[in-house]
Image (cartoon, rainbow, N blue to C red; front, top):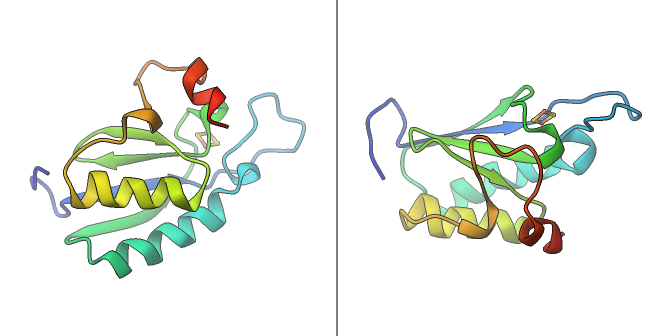
Length: 119
Ligand code: FES
């Protein structure tokens, strides 16, 4: 993992909330607050060096949420469970790899068929 900034991994987790009937939905309604809390403690427990987990407002991937982005790698993830977060920590943050099945393309507006099937 490249260490070009203040942190080797600066992780932004969307906790944006919209009204329940909003057509785009929101990450908070899909459980992002509890999963962010889990990620923060799991990153610390795993001893990930130079990592920071921050709350973000809307990252404009609402339909794909919950979403997070990891900089400076500029890798976006859709995640649903603590197991997804564990995999991101082990594979990406500690291993320097990518969790391909959870990755979002920058231009992506909807979940792929494979991502939706894993729901
Ligand atoms: S509400 Fe999370 S990306 Fe918009």
